[in-house]
Length: 315
Image 1 (cartoon, rainbow, N blue to C red):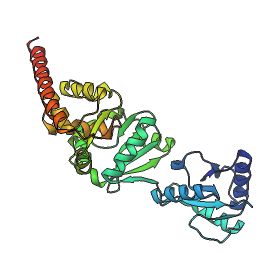
Image 2: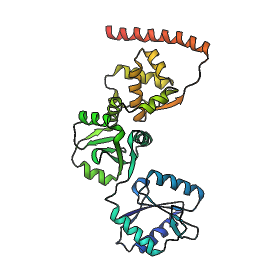
Image 3: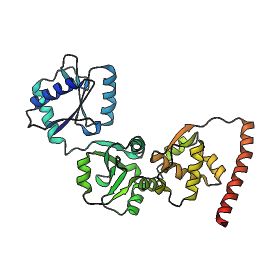
Image 4: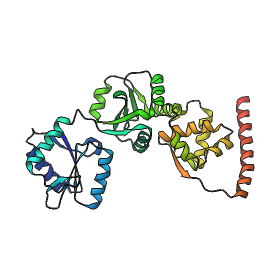
């Protein structure tokens, strides 16, 4: 089966193109199908406009295995790599039959390494978009159902898997899955809440050098309350949530206001960032006089927090 995503034309134009591809492929009915998802297609066909050409170029850079064709105003098809040779029906048929044989064997790689995986999860978790397989060295480890906010462990117990993910973050990869593929791989295995697993993974990982460098000149703002299951009985986590929901703060400001170690604040931010709960903002420059006043205020607030904590313990 070859899945085709058509961009830049109306429904009638799309249907006409798909019918032409079906005839040229000489494949059985149902083997050339319309797709509506970039992560669930083998062939991207775009109309010939500068904007769509640039967009297609970026898509192919992110998805090297994706085939791309360009349809000009006269309906002629060309390869999306800039070639000027028109694809006739013979070339179209051969290409589609090649996609047919490779569809199931060649997964679409979504992300490689800590930075790319973090970026993709931050993009897709809030919108609950898609399914994926997380693996290391060719070994599948975890199924991610982002639409349902669930995870399926394929081999190891959760505690061991979290440690493995944390240690090998830089060597992990994400491959796209279709819903049917995820269901087949998951079988009767138990589905777990995804965010608590990601939260533990992020807090245990030490592959956050790039983010920590950005935190030197940035404030952090929490976009919404995290899933309460990720916080559990973490009193300091609740305090950080309360503070960062009200205002953006740097790591040092959080540490000073809440009387916490900076390392503990960073661990919290790593987890909130991976799960898509937190965003970074450029920290405003504070004038010297304002900084002194702020330091005094922060000291007062810190003492208040300590007093409150002491009251909580006494209660």
